[in-house]
Length: 434
Ligand code: AMP
Image (tube, rainbow, N blue to C red; front, side):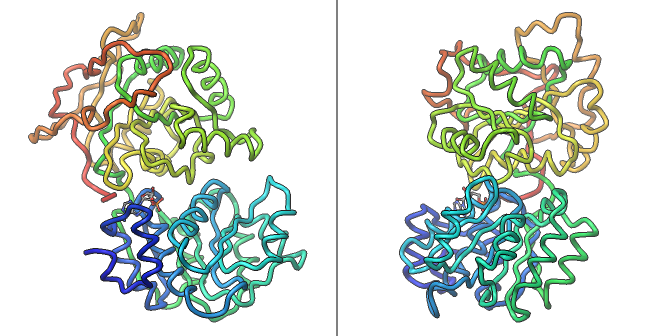
């Protein structure tokens, strides 16, 4: 399948080529034709599958004709980072069309948003709170909206946005196309989808399991040794861009500071930072100014950095879903990546839940040469019960280090070896096609 087969406007195809996309991803193959047919869609897919272009391309196609400078497409997203990322996709894919896109979110001044609305725009990508402010102040007219996209609906529910969403819906025309995307379908989201969607086509790309282009490994370690282990790992492992997740904002800030002290080019991305500082961290990570970004779950939503070689879970996430989202940051599109999880003894039950969803045990490893002191990871973490008979190639070779990987020169890379972990246990789980 290629993009030409969708029958998109040539100006949009030019945007697709400029973005470097050659083959549609599975979600694009499924969703683009139905969205072009102006049907409602329930999309069960998460970030990393190419879902943004799956709705952006047919929306741009629709907007390439018809009246200009009125809001005809509204995308609602849970975080500013995701809103920015979606907006950038519209800008890049639609660069040769007359359609304009703008973002609306809180934490920044309203002035430029008001000016943008006054100038006129066809696409608004918004977070719920600030959008409601503009609605209540009469600054935005949503009566001409033809397409509504709710992106990451499950995350909007987690963040308490459902009442805001329902308020926003009251300001939209009843006759419109609705595109509803969610990685998971908790009951509340199912109810909302039923309220909004009319005879939807369901498109689905393996919902739960992370990308099969990602290799997973677990490093049993007590909490007090995590920073040392991370530093030792960064020394030993050839890495490109590394995204590290911590449980709290404090831990993100402290860890980033620790890494900076060790002369790593690291930045934090956490909720106590101003919007400008957050954007600087994301832009710096994307441009290569920072090799390591230390983030909390909510802040990392919507980070669209294509070449993340490693996701390191410094702290085990609270939910299996969060694990999937974190891991979705690497191995994106057709790239490969590695996901390392530091697990303390107390994390065992969450690890078991994650393994259930992956459909395979995660390989336990210990870092060669690292001083674990009195801690014996072998005893804390039993070896996997089940091994794949297939010998998967090592993924490390697929993610070569970039010269900028570390400000400090790493020692020669020696593969971290699992205790008893033959390469056979390094297999990707079945699941989502990325
Ligand atoms: P998304 O799931 O929309 O966040 O997209 C994940 C990543 O895949 C983004 O970096 C997109 O730019 C990229 N992407 C989307 N569609 C394609 C495609 N057809 N070919 C290659 N990369 C793509």
